[in-house]
Length: 113
Length: 113
Image (cartoon, rainbow over all chains, first blue to last red; front, side):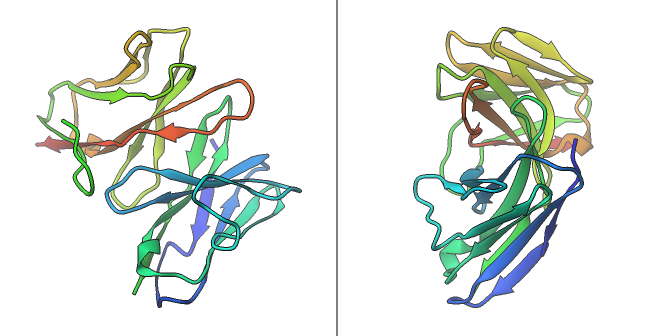
């Protein structure tokens, strides 16, 4: 499976600011995904990021709030814009491996004050 | 049993016991299922998968059972160890076409020495 890293691993931010989370993979992958995991909850897909095209957002998530970049086959960023305390969550990136299996990064733990 | 909010269903076992974690999936058309383990402070880790043309699949100390009739998935862990303590998620998807992973609510497994 691919080795996936995320930066930052955690952050504490003030409301109204924005944070960009980076996801780096050690091999080229076609599809990358961004998830949100609120405290004590399961994972919710934010968007699918394919290189060379705009990200596909799930219901309830919009590009203005969660802009995504996918400049190449090993890297993606997710920005959480104009943050509020409700955005406090773990943000996870994943990549698609064999079949439809997804492998996850370690996550970015965000606290918004 | 089921719970909402911050209270995950919890299974408490003694070290050496066998554990069974259950999952009811939502889409009768789903044909690929994955179990993930998420330890505190980490991203989800792939454990085992199963396609819908199988009823059972075994790994090292883990077995996944699939009952398509009642849309039920279970994960059996043999000789449970303290290191198995984590939150376990099932996920479902369709292998054909564009389909994303849908995650279940999760079960916390607590293993006492």
